[in-house]
Length: 205
Image (cartoon, rainbow, N blue to C red; front, side):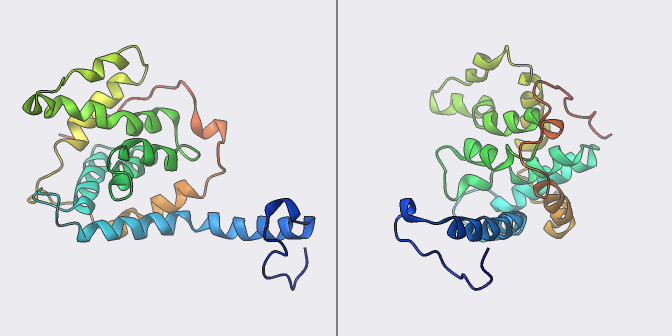
């Protein structure tokens, strides 16, 4: 790759040269390496969310959920996923669960990603009936090997984490874990562990 090439030579991708695309590949590596820092910045921005109507901010909900997971002895995938499970609320409020799951999918265990991807439907168990909706929609996933993990995630770490009096750990205490997870090789089968069920750890007493 040329040491002096700063931008591509083309204005249409079909006209790009090998040198162009080698340069872009190097730039992409640098950009990808900053994923964790961008996620942390997005979390920080959720501290300013004051229109939700809840007693705590979206950031505090993520921190409280992840703190509960950590205190239950959950592994790094569960803790980081729990911290980030609602990170899509700002940009994709109608499908925030799937948005968050796609961020995690290349870097985390399949079970954990599936739980994040489906937690929106499973959370409906706690409130859907107040709107006249079906609170049992989660039952359509009953045959999934990850069904119980999602039930437990919502019960223990998500729906219970809107308490301004709960002593939650600060975002800074999770940053190293976020960086560790997003520094993994993408789509590594040893990380993804398709079909493996670990479940949540026992709740702390």
